[in-house]
Amino acid sequence: MFIYTRAERYKLVSKPFADILYWKPFIDLKLVLVIINKCKFAEFSKFVDMYAQTKIRGSDVPVFYAKGDYESIVKYVKDEYRAVLKALKQIKEALEELRPQQT
Image 1 (cartoon, rainbow, N blue to C red):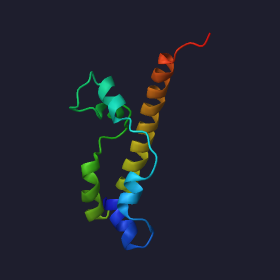
Image 2 (image 1 turned 135 degrees about the horizontal axis):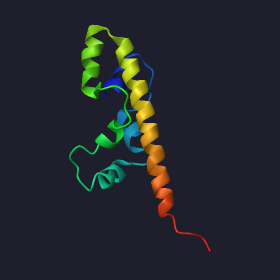
Image 3 (image 1 turned 60 degrees about the vertical axis):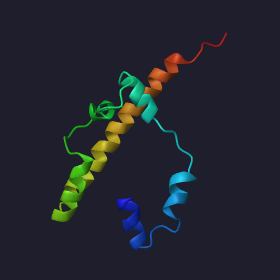
């Protein structure tokens, strides 16, 4: 919501937030991550955190923004992006193993 509010302020988006949130196709992998985490909701994001190279958390971003430390924000976003891609690759490989064999 923070990013959307900023984008709206600078007229970078023309759709209402609800349209972006609810009418865009997506795959929610949260359930897959919960299952991988032994069906526990607590700390299910640790699966993605295993791949992160830094210990910066999303909750740190507003602090960096307030201090004008934009370089740390960019570093966090890039690291989180790489970590999510690695996690998704591992999930994809695991799900492919579950695919029934064609005869």
